Length: 143
Image (cartoon, rainbow, N blue to C red):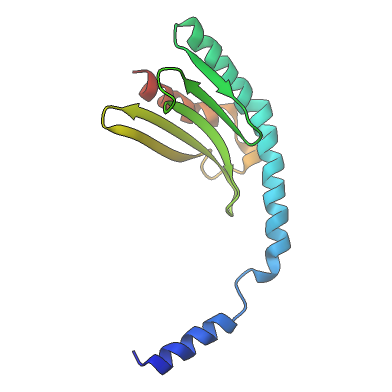
């Protein structure tokens, strides 16, 4: 391609208004709304479910702890600091809840991120959606 033509196309592209450029405030408001919905989900569903899970596992002899820093919830296992399951918010539009499972094995650490409640708004995610991610990850870590 001719350098002059490439330069024109680049400059034209840079001069075009960005898609959604005027929606900066809307994006911020959407992220704030997602954070609010996630905090409700975190405090009302995810954290209590992880605390109950930890209690059950401790009664079965598995040592684990629940950590709930400001914007995530994690159940960590004492067998390895790399064995954990956590839930967090991704505010990239459209905002969604991410479940992350980390598992240490001989060859290294496997980390897998999946969307919790695929296709659902954050406010519509239920304890069943959280369990649909949590239970298979527990099996991977504990078996």
